[in-house]
Image (cartoon, rainbow, N blue to C red):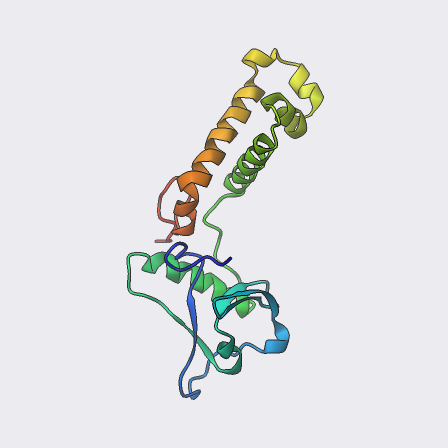
Length: 181
C-alpha cells in the first residue's frame, strides 16, 4: 500500500517523534490531517498543505523530525525533504525536476499503456489523443501519429518496467540526477 524508503528514497522519509520535546519543531495536529490508509502499524496521512506522509500514529502526539539514512540516496532524500518542508511551511517550492513537456509525455505514455491494456488499437488511441480528422489526413500505415503512439507505448513500457525507479531515486526520465548545483 505504501512506498518504502528502500524502494522510493526520493518519495519517503522516516517521520519520527523527537525525544524530549524541548526542540522547537513542527507538530502535526491530528485534527488537521486526513488519514488515507493504514498498514503494518503505519498511517498514510494528507496534511492541509496537500503533502502525503507515512508515519507512526505516535508522531501525532509529539514534535516530529525526519530520520535520514547516510546512504547513496542522501541527495535525493534531502531534495525531497527540502521540498516537503517548504510545502508544510507554505514557502515557495523548489522547481520540479521534470519539465511540463516531460510530465505531459509521461502522462500520455501511461494513458497509452492503459488503453492498450483495454485492447485499444494504435489507431483508436490516436483518434482519442489527436482527433479523428487528424488521423484521417494521413495514410495510417505510414502515419506520423501511428509512430508517435508506438513511441509512447515504448516509453510507457520502459517507465513501468524500470524507468519509474529512476524517478523514485530522484533522477529524471533520462537517468540524470536531479540535484541542483
